[in-house]
Length: 612
Image (tube, rainbow, N blue to C red; front, side, top):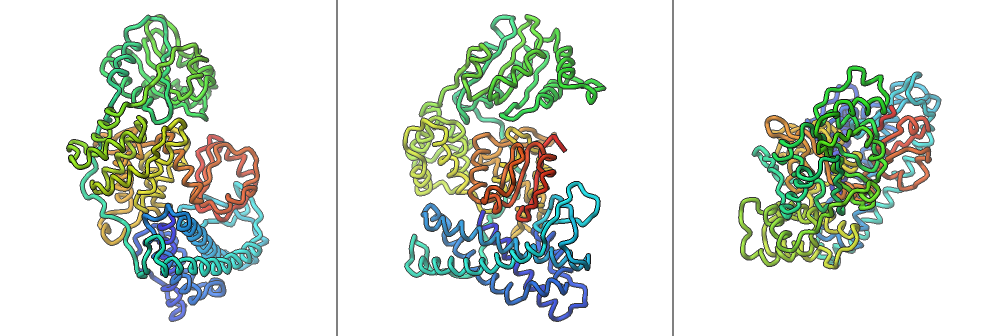
């Protein structure tokens, strides 16, 4: 993550130096820049004209840009040299400081460019104007001057300009301080980090040229469970029955439910089937509409005029008389069931409602007998790890012993095994690497869900740097949100995550983004939820536990701030919020925008709210 941010800033500074030279030699000629194959092109298009502006010339001097470029190169080299050694607290702290100072420098230079642009366009003192803020698709914040607006916010531009200059000076002091610490590490060869060799590094690997293959779901340890659930669905009494599948996160509840849902026996037995994701935060209407869609029931022509209860009544009419199966995935409490149960008719024809939940109390509240999933035993754990890590190949004999140790240390949690298998499959299959993985898995008996996070974090920490921001970006989406791949790719490209490095220039950014996604899928960090007719990925999602990991890491990296529901809390009340680069709001967008906050450190803004 930090490595990517520094690379991005270095490209920024390098282009500024080039454009400063152009400004000095010919201020009146139209400027052109060599093609840059990154999302930074968006930014360069703005800089091309801004660098000629007399206002910007007053704010940014070539010597200053060259100094930052030289020092950031040194910091980038340390990031390269410290790879694999960032578990040391001192190294970890230095990497965090490099990340923060990189963001401060980028923010300051971006604001200088914007300030100059506004003064050049308006030729009036900026502080007296009022502006609209709009979401940005590039690294430069887009602010549109207008008298009519969605949100009018008076912004003290001169005050912010002065603050940006102070922050840039502070950044110089901080860079010098960091450099002193790094020189000590290099001098004494601490943590095995030797003398630096300044030069550009290429940390990206060659992306595969072959078309990705999406494998079918591999299930281990659910044979007996599948048989028993099928019996509960198809053989027992005709009375409408609720079947709860209960277990902790990552145990395979959704996987088992999905296997049973798509079993030919189930397809033959039920006339109508529907699957709906519930999650902690849900909307009754969304659940009803998803059941209509999943069951392929035609919506009423006047659906927009119906309230939630009327829509539920229409669902009741269309299910009446049919034997149906409804799956409610990830039910957190009985509230959602209370909202929906009256719309599921009981015709004594063997209809079933199946739900998955982490909380056994939900089953008790529904007066339903829970089906509790068990952890995998050691043999099942090893079988799953082998299948996921080696696919159709067998495990080499020299890795069997250490492989069984890795599987056992996952303590029977399928998600942990699958994620670690993805990590093992992507690295060289050597005893040294597998021993390293085994040593870094918690060896104590896991009794708390929190303790699995270290195991899952191991896969994140070993991701190539260019994939880390792509993975963390999944934390921006609401829980159980089905993400359309095309939308995700556009967002990644706009954020500047997709980078060409000379080895993959023949591919477009969109094609590279698809390769990035397939890499994350291959590592079992992303789940394919829908496929295209040609076998490609149409939509995807992440497991709740991995989404929690995204949010934790995103917080550590100041990568993302999530506001599930805006309740009027001042956006500036948390000092950490001033460092986080992205913001996402999942509901009550109007409440947030009407509060008239300005947060110029935000690089991008995502809203999934219903209230627009």
